[in-house]
Image (tube, rainbow, N blue to C red; front, side, top):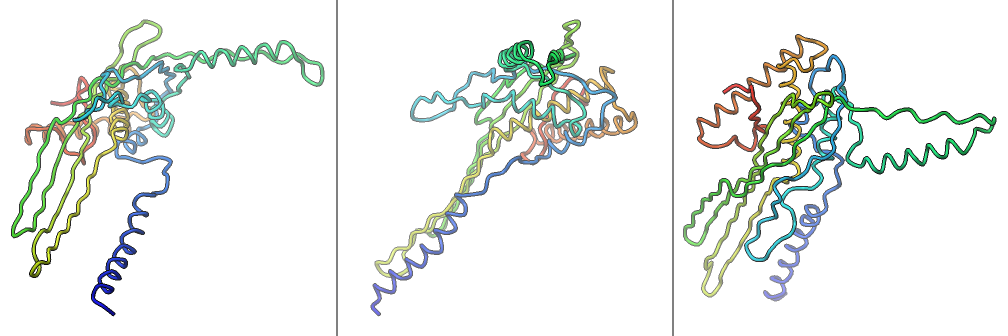
Length: 308
């Protein structure tokens, strides 16, 4: 067997080892829902004394910001346009679904049209026994309107990197932070008063690592190897965490202002005190570090009444 043949076989063996791994990485199975720390906190809310009926007409991207590119103009939005669905999901999950009853308002025209069709059918047709079909029950109305939206998306709030090379062997890392900010308020439908309002920000972390070897291993034989990977935190996941934290903050603030209450006062007080202590620890760490909380920390809340 010639030396060239051995080299080709070695190259083919290397490709056979690498390609299956690439296929595995590129084809992950679908996931229905990713449980985050903020969702666990939202789910652990103690039950309320009485569920709150709320309506969300729209929770939109109010930044109007497009994705930043260095080469060509991009007309793709930097923030998802489906934040209303994210908020509704967070409301339905609060306290294992016991805190809020959410009524459909984003597509109200579709609902009204469908009810009109049902109403006409019930008026024109009868049961097999010849009885008139009962009328539709009245629609559920909301005691609270939840308003707000995504009010900020700041890119490259923090950037940095580190690299070193010695005798043709080197490595470097790159780091970047973006920040998404959401605002949420509860409005009374009876008086129009803004009962509570909160604002939450969440860091979006991106980092990359690269390594390379470039050196002669023998006379006229050059070895060159490059490797690396980049990890970008999904903006949608970060936005979902911020919205979930905003819902928790809204519940806590309403409980502190006697807007609503927990079924178990002791359990509610313990949860509120623990949440306020966590927020105080995060803000203290931010002041000590001189920058925002790390990526492993929960979304930070700047709601009125949070400890400073």
